[in-house]
Length: 124
Image (cartoon, rainbow, N blue to C red; front, side, top):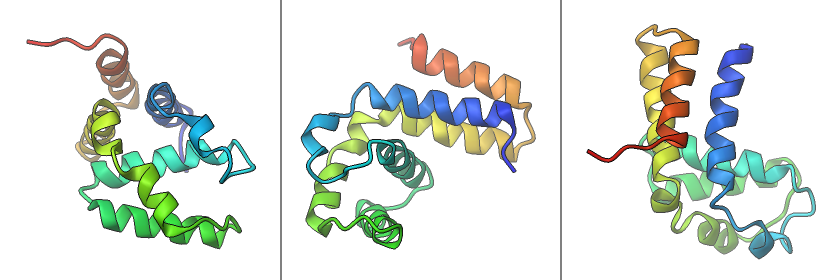
């Protein structure tokens, strides 16, 4: 089960990505606006886990179909098309989160790193 701090980590990552996601472009395909958070998280976690574009697209299409949202595969593929670039900071934050959780780092520490990465990015 997810702790409150882990929820905050994933919420931080998704909310950061939502700033770069054009909801209006896809409103015609999804009647429930809550689905966008799930779609964004699925895309980010897929790329952070090393899945290919095609695998993420297929899995997301299958998941949407399973929960009763009927959307063409090419629409899902279009949604994902540039997200490996658009969500690059969030994908890295998710990868960092997975890695740090696996290493046993504290969730509070992870939340701090993710917050710094997404809210105060530094270029060296």
